[in-house]
Image 1 (spheres, one colour):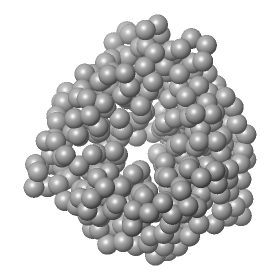
Image 2 (spheres, one colour):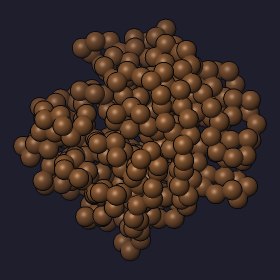
Image 3 (tube, rainbow, N blue to C red):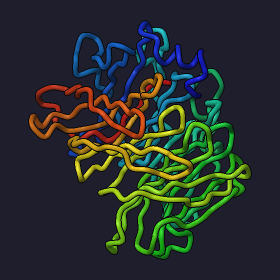
Image 4 (cartoon, rainbow, N blue to C red):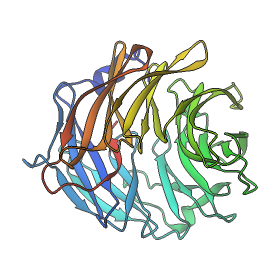
Length: 365
């Protein structure tokens, strides 16, 4: 979806459309998911008259969360119980009318993404054995329910698999993981197709590097992958180009302090990266195939990001944060403009007593 797509642009920026936002809390035993709302031109809001939103009790240590393409389903990784939970939404009212749990997988789930057509759910298992990798779960059409254990199919085996990204335009998946041999000589990027054959793979990062997150540009031509290094070689965001066959090539990087999640703007020309331990957000831009660092600003424990809306020369994002002054958790609304210039337009704090560190954030498409 690009800025030239009139219908999606109108859909994302319709001031009459309320979209649901989910925020997980997975630290200090806070096993819940918080539901908020987003309205273009208005911003974040609560649910049912409560500015802090509606709380859904879930299983142990909810972490990653992702919406299906039609916004009707949300999948949540419960790391503590090794479950995948599904919340089903009424698209007209925004209420949750279904709460389902898939049987425990026992394979250390760490990430989850829906396929482009919403018919499949991809789950990453970070098992250090051959059972680790990417699994596909089929979803029963019209019900939003898993078909059962028989539908859990390993499509790509990978040593210590990590962050997963669905590539746009049906180009497959991008998966960050440890080196396939288990050695400390860099992180591994694999590009398995939908059915498991690997379109490309490579090590990125110097010896002693460990992966964080990967993000694909909307045009499908670029990846940005973040990693940190144990041996003092520097923490970085690497720019990876994808050729027509899906073969990746590292073409550059920028130095950052403890980088976490990268995200792209809709035009594939810029984006931002969170730097969680440095309490900072930094923009980036592309210039002739080179990755350039943009501006930065301080934001307490900035970690996870959701793309809310876009417009000419600027996109807006929700970034998880904890206020350094009040200690309250919340979401900052961040704008990325030309050249990777980032601006914090304000933070929606959840109020007194809400001091748990957020785990992840997702917004209905």
